[in-house]
Image (cartoon, rainbow, N blue to C red; front, side, top):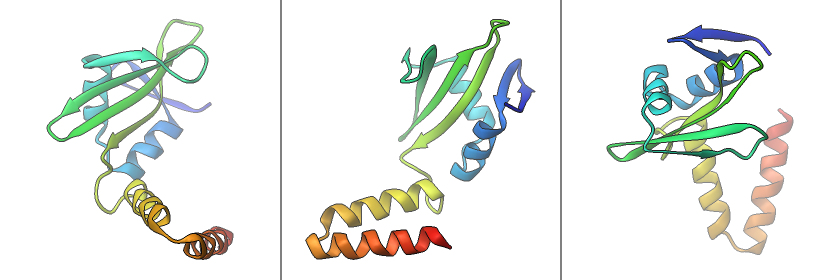
Length: 118
């Protein structure tokens, strides 16, 4: 697992890449991690989820400690997703799918499979 240090925290390349895709500034993620409104056990073993509300958005950071007791950021996102990001497009696709008729869902599923092959 490749990683980088920033503000005394280890950031995985995965987390940095996802934050870039999602338009999330690393300093906002640091703020959410260091000063969360909520934190609780994450879905993965030994992971924790940190959440911070900022105006109309919620920043979520997933982290865990390594064997040296250092924090590692595994992923981070902003909800609702920022316009134009991959997450915003996925959310719109999901909403469209939910509203579709049976045959519309079949069509959208086939279209998505064809698109993913590219």
